Figure 1 (cartoon, rainbow, N blue to C red):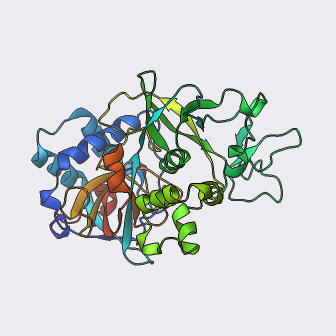
Figure 2: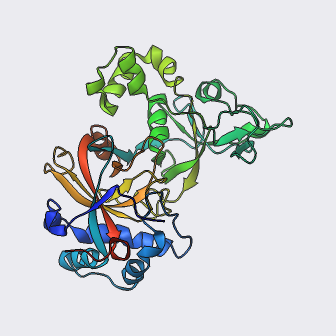
Figure 3: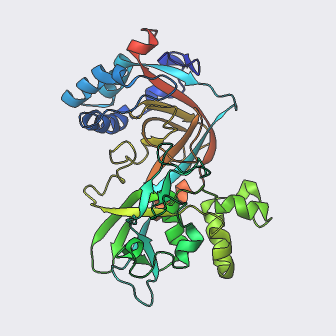
Length: 372
């Protein structure tokens, strides 16, 4: 597969702030991918960064640990060439995501009444091989019935009790119970959460599946209704609106028909985030979600977003590793930055929406040698 003309090869000397970054932190994230691919290789993205071209870099990353930032920088310069990612839509865009941390109960109580659900037994993967005629081609999941697959229950139906009771689809699905429906919704949006259980345990839930319908963000809905100006839509402004209008929460949230199901996972390292689409734990400030159809997981991306200062009050210029994806992350110059876990990370993630330049680090075997 030829390398896409979307990539315009350049020099590390021409990458803004390259020499000032902490390449050692990025190397630690990259090394996790190097270990994971021994279990299952990553799929090559449509833009042509061939997974097999990472072999030398992965071999060295598994066997050698740089002693300092300088050695880590030399590692990336030795194995890769930077290429500016161009996009027909113009400037690239970064947003932020995080892992919420909320109080939860293992059982339903008067206070804890909002469930996080496991994947139902009757939810099946659907594709062109088993999709009935007339079913929306967008749907990747469906409900298995004696008469064949049908569209799964949507958010409103599930929250009104479609999976309640003792039927096959509803038995023991509740992983944990939360206090607040809005907290639960944003856990759905982020796809993971740390749960501080009332019995003293620290647990984690991560994405297992979804009902399959298209995602419709509440910010877009509230903007269309004239409730929040589009330029002021943030996670914080959405939460504030819900707090001021508790009687309208269902009205807005049920317009997002997509519903997320979870699975339990251990919190093995509190400094890292959940295991994401690339099957490695996310590294705060160093993992980025990309369009997995276009890009290859494990690819390093240097992101230059000079107007983004929320991370450390300095222009955001960091080497990130492609380790996740998302339905809203589409296009070659589009990324979602993993900020971390907890409320402080959420405060940052909720306001990130900045123009950015993306520099893909392309294995030298594909870039043809080039300049340093």
